[in-house]
Length: 456
Image (cartoon, rainbow, N blue to C red; front, side):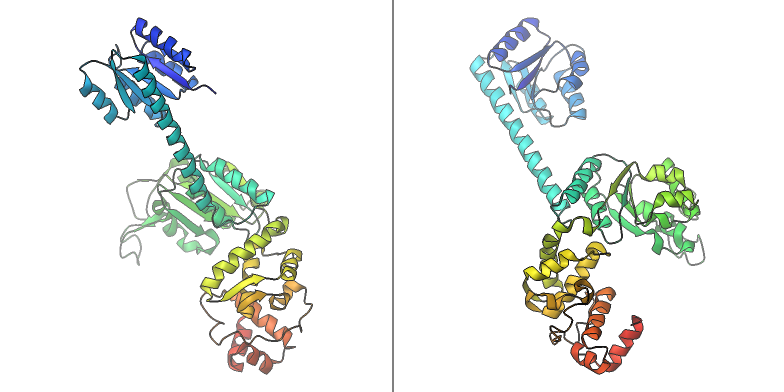
């Protein structure tokens, strides 16, 4: 494909000669006589290289270059300048031109300079593309999968990230909605801003306004000093509203006003504070049903879901399970100080045959449990939680001696995982409390306390 050049010079004779020379060399050339005409044509003809005369009536070459760069900062420029005007050419280079050519010039030098400028332009494009690919790869590092459905999610993220549209993420609990929200933020033009995540269902109703809007000192009894709210903290970045369907109707009205006006007042404050952040929302509820029953505002839903991404449950992307298992083994060998080298083919098949109602979070917990039981070497079916195996093969191996007295209650262990380990041990020991406690390497009293805690 021939490369394109836009030639801008007010001298008709020089413009015609250069056009013929460049066309003969195989370039696609558009010759223009002044800056204003160039600006009219530029949107429909974006060349690989622009050659500008420095002095032109109505608009200088540098003024034209700066206007072009407002819409396309990556455009490459060469300048033509009269003999003796080197200082003007240097000024053009400082403003962003690649190089300059003094008049009169010989064709060989002209063509050589054009060739170098185009080579440099291609190199810049390659570097920009590689940087983008590298950044996109890092942005998706924590979202594991090669299945068609997760690749669709990646594609949607890449498309919407380049806009400022609000995004609504839908999907079951545990599918990774916050990871997708972070990927959108990290590939967007707001990536240098702050990513703030908030669980709307976890904020007490009486604290909702102060958490979102902040407050001034003395706004209420305990307001000893001023505090910015979530809207301010996310200014210039992204605010992720997880479980947005749990917002009260009063909070929904206030959120809608912020989205429309892009400004807030702190509690007790008198001045408006402008805010500019991207809103990404998520829900595992049927939000359309909540609109129908009157518990969610339709006008707010329209504002929040300019673009919707539905994240598939794990049971619909089971081909990704082996990749996820490898990822979690590597991750938790570090967090749990274990030495798991692999997982057996039979164990992978068992994981693939399970429905995973809790999705990826469920898989991660189950795998952590298996890793703790295995401790080192290869995870087999005997190490998998009983619920995953469908409560078969429970007596294949009653050896939980790898569990140390400190493994239960360790901060890296989630309550769900601790409950799962204890439940599995109770089943293996046929609910004999002393045997179970011995198996888990904990006292009977500790076992009873944990059983009470988890209602076992």
